[in-house]
Amino acid sequence: MRRFLKNFALISVGLIAGVTATIQLSATAQQSTTLPLDELRTLSNVFAQIKREYVEPIEDKQLLTDAVKGMVSSLDPHSTFLDKKDFSEMQEQTSGKFAGLGIEITSEDGLVKVLNPIEDSPAARAGLQAGDLITRLDDKPVRGMSLDKAVRTMRGTPGTKITLTIYRKSEERTFPVTITRAEIKVQSVKTKILDNDIAWVRVTSFQERTVPDLAKKLSEIAAQDPKLKGVILDLRNNGGGLLQGAVGVAAAFLPADAVIVSTKGQSPDSKQVFNATPEMYRLSEPGDPLAGVPALFKKIPMVVLVNAYSASASEIVAGALQDYKRATIMGKTTFGKGSVQTVRPLTNDSALKITTAYYYTPSGKSIQAYGVKPDIPVDQNKDGDPDDVLITREIDSEKHLRNKQSAEDKLIKDREQRRIEEMQRIEERNAKKTPEEKEKEKSKKPTELGSADDFMLSQAVAFIDGQPVKRSSSKLE
Image (cartoon, rainbow, N blue to C red; front, side):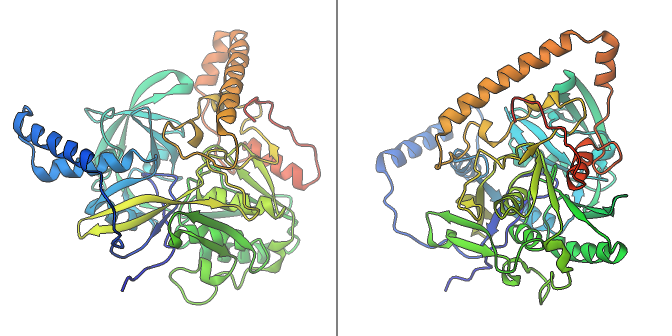
């Protein structure tokens, strides 16, 4: 009989971002499948030709494994073949504790792209920024290297060093950064009470401890400030994580039993509805981890901050709160990853992480490729975000899954036109700057989220206080 650990969703935090996956611990069900004989014959012939004539001998296992990897990776950006080490690392990382650099990455044009340097990690302290492209790992070029191999190269024993060669688009320069590996302990929930009785709640990723930690923090906030008049949920740079974590975070601010997200794919197992009930968001502990959350968090004014690096599980939370009109979504359009990956063990040494479903917001809307559009578009910086035009989202990936609900070709064409217009606007503005102004802009450090200089956060506070908000003028929004 097949045994399942249902709905154990995860992102490999710190090294591969934007994955909402469901682990089902079972052997893949045997199904009768008619295989195309001509194509199998071609595969056999190619295999034999390589064995006979390739310049160097290659083991059969390596050839077949690489063939499987190629077949799976051709499906979409999020499906992949996992060997034993990869699978073990994915499970380890969901605990919020692992050894590495502390970055969430994806691939772009054959290079490794930084989606998010995890706060307080070696990568963050070294100055890595979201959007940086890694071109070399020590003396090895990244182009042509699989993402899995890049991950393994960056991971290692705490205390050891690795030199990354970084290309930063916004500054049009390439430079090396040497980082010392360390054990990464991610605190996924951070909070503070702002001066005007507004709570700032930052969720950096969705892990096993996120929901109970959020419940504890919200209770502490309510006890510290009985006059609390609003809450800001900050999901910027949050690349995703455990599906249960997303359901639980949304449930903390929505009525009991509210539908948070639904999934639908080809197989019966992929058709599910997730409600705001303990059974849907409880992971490792008995009872309801949200039982002690004060009721005021379900009714006080709320803003959710998002940007282009808010992906997957973050989009589930933002989409649900937007659909119920529980919160005002502010910031930039999110990444647009609206699919679910299921990890199925194949043998004792390997597993298949395969996209099995689209997910839908409570109103039945798919955000795949489109992302969650903010109710109020706001820039991260007071003077605008010119680098936004360089950011690639799910829709820009060549093999991305199509959104079946709308005419995507028109959206892609329109988006490209707006990107061109925005580039022209930025070039015209840059042409008017003095060399001193350009140099000052290059040396400007990224804003620390939650700090006094955080312009987007200040606009969220202004909105809750009933003050005017400076909307983004970007043509992309």
